[in-house]
Image (cartoon, rainbow, N blue to C red; front, top):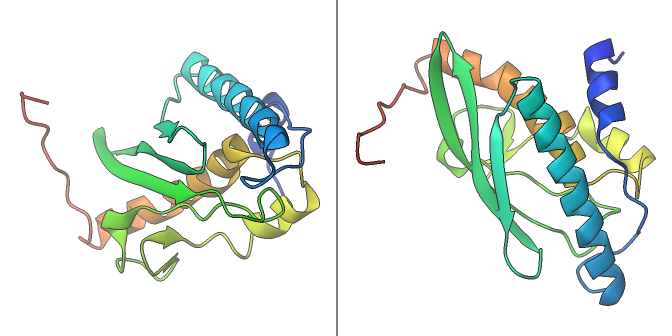
Length: 168
């Protein structure tokens, strides 16, 4: 069902303990600290493994997240904006990660560019509340989605490589 590399990745991401959402006051602040620690560890692990593939930041309240993710295909780096809001019922409900610029380009996406994680990721998330957090959503939701969908979209000509300008 789950390959060894995935099990190893998940085992290396710290789990979270606090079951709190954005409306829970001080427990939410504690949950956010755990989220950041988990994300920092996951990003650090990725960099050590030469597998750095996203950057995330949040608003002050930790309720709106945004950043960039990228996928390298045939030695070309395809970069996309990421955004998601933390649901009111978090962590019982997983965040819906969106790549707005890909909206409408694949059937495995909902309106607004939200990636489809219903069949595989959401049941896994549900079994792991409150242990899973944003780092787990990236590792088990967005990462596999990118690995499957981006090469297919490139092959179909729905995504084209964009040269980086020297000013960026």
